[in-house]
Image (cartoon, rainbow, N blue to C red):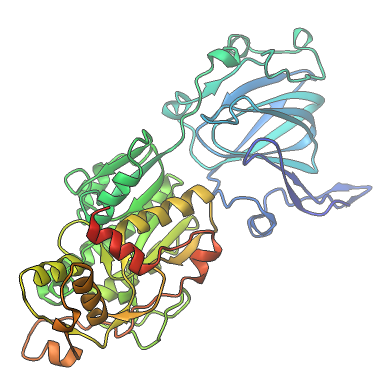
Length: 466
């Protein structure tokens, strides 16, 4: 008897599944769809919502080739069919064909955009398929077709098509040269006016499949704004939106705003991603930790000190309920606009000698590098989950960084005076607690093939404007 196995094909994402078929003289039994076992074996967790059966009474019934806007899991309950598939997705594998006989002990996983066809070899044949979206006339309007007899694809039909039973519609489908490729699902960047959103826009400049939207187009803190937004075209959502005013989050109004964006808004994005089968990239923060660990791994339990950290931790937990997610956790972010590095450079140039906290440690993260890391995870198809991303190099304090900025702009670093957190905030009110250590362990992102830039090198480039 076969063992459950999932095998690749020349068409990316098209998979052949060997199904165990225990039986005796009375018949057989199979687990046609068993989520836990099949996902463990390598099948995508594609979330089927509809089960269809095509009953074919005669040998030679031939249907296709149709590329549909959903994933399909195909099998037969009775009979035997010859299945054929053509990659109709935009890209280098467009036109790649594959064929395989489907019997009760074989199933096929067909990803969105791959054209599907079959021919009945043994009748009656009950051809069954699970799909992960509900059929509608609007969805059918998105189908792409290619002719069953296309000479380029050259499918070796066991029963010649002139002897098979085809519909007039299928006979009229275009040749491959005239077929409309299924476009790549688009990428949506939410929070496009923020410093990370702008860095992502620069990194993906020239990509026609990326939409970067600001709060005016999509305000995740506003239920009506999210409800009115059309997420259907998007296969990837990158959440660069957040309430990041750490001290303001400790006020009554700021607390509500932080929860609205960082928790309820994130929950709305998660549900949109779930409904439309999109990957979600969510940017997290070192503030989900209390800073007592010298270096934070991705698996450390949450222990936020203030409201901002609490909302970010809650948002991370919600994102983790989505199977296809990346939580990109970062620290001490530097990008466009006002930030610590620019402030220190300005103070140095104006002849001001600052007192800077010397007992909070970590590493900077430059938004250009954060954008590169997000792109890397998406393009490589890295394993879903949480990844720490920051600059590499020695762990330093804010005072150490201030001294280095002074040195790089030609000022005397001795003009910077390190002080304790307690001293720095003495007499000030409305200050959120900060983690003492914000340093992130980078082993997981490095193992995924991404090499974080050295902090000092990145700092030099940032200050030089290159």
